[in-house]
Amino acid sequence: MKILRIVSRIIIGLVFIFSGVVKAIDPLGTAYKFHDYFQAFNLGFLNSLSLPLAMLLFTAEFISGISVLTGLRFKTGIWGTIILMTIFTPVTFILALTNPVSDCGCFGDAIHLTNWQTFGKNIVLVLFLLILFKERDQFKKIQKRKIEWPVISVVIVLFILFSLVNLRYLPVIDFLSYKKGVKIADKMVVPEGVLVDVYRTTFIYEKNGVKKEFSLNNYPSNDSSWKFIDQKSVLIRKGYVPPIHDFQITDQSGDNLTNEILSNKGYSVLMISKKLSEAGGKYLTTGFGLGKYCIAKGISFYVISSSGKDEIKSYENGLTFCSADETTLKTMVRANPGYILLKDGVILNKWSWANVPGEGWFGKLSDNYK
Image 1 (cartoon, rainbow, N blue to C red):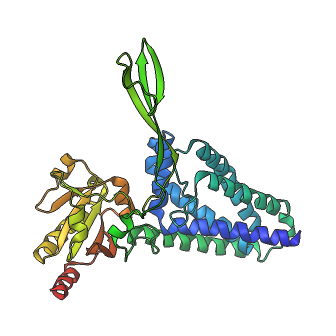
Image 2 (tube, rainbow, N blue to C red):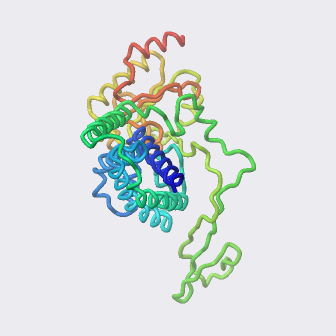
């Protein structure tokens, strides 16, 4: 039983620490996942709490894992993990049954699991957790209570600071497809011979007030007495999806600039704001000023947003404003606004509004290129 206690302690501790750390590396990604949940369950009024709840969750996961693994406030850590598993195991079961969100985000974007895989993982963890709970009195204290709480408090503060740094300056580790060194076009290619999505399509026709579903093989194409009502497609087999599959950039006239941007042999800067109205005014002004400077230096500059055309018009100032899918922009850079430097379609660097270089840096870049 002693070995089982040790194994359970290590597994629970490491899993909760890992889950907390990968979420803290990408706080906005975790907040976006909360937002997805709220939308799926018609709880949109909670959207403003997405980021605070995300930080509360990954801090609780991390500190519970630390407590279990190190023995600092061990029983408190056990109760922390029990509370978290009591909440999320039923939630993941509901997600597995209904699938409103394809990936629960339990390990951020570091590891993607299906909802059924997540539920199975939670069941295994619950078994180890039950062992720890049953044997909790067999673990000895490693420090006195008056020492443990200050140590735990310091760890919590440092961990929150770590997450805030990642929130302000972009994740210290980029788990997403748009990372430095990636040639975007290469990540959009679908290899030959891979499985593709397979759908079952049914057609709904009506005759004499009675509706009936038909398949592609037996629908009444030659019988005019049937009136077509609707059709629906159901995914029956998921096929290969390239890492980048939704990169489409259009200007305000509707022209697709994707190939132009990706094939540019020179430098291009993408200023990305998922919603212009949600970005700080002074940060947009700084970005627009940088854009005009870059253009004067021969560097292509694009402002890309998912904001509506009317809103974009209110910001037009001679720069090239483009539109793209909001989810794509969230994936490209975790900042509003954020910046991506491209050359020949390769991502050379990424910045948030807080650490984007000044005009002098881009001036030297232009001079060196010439």
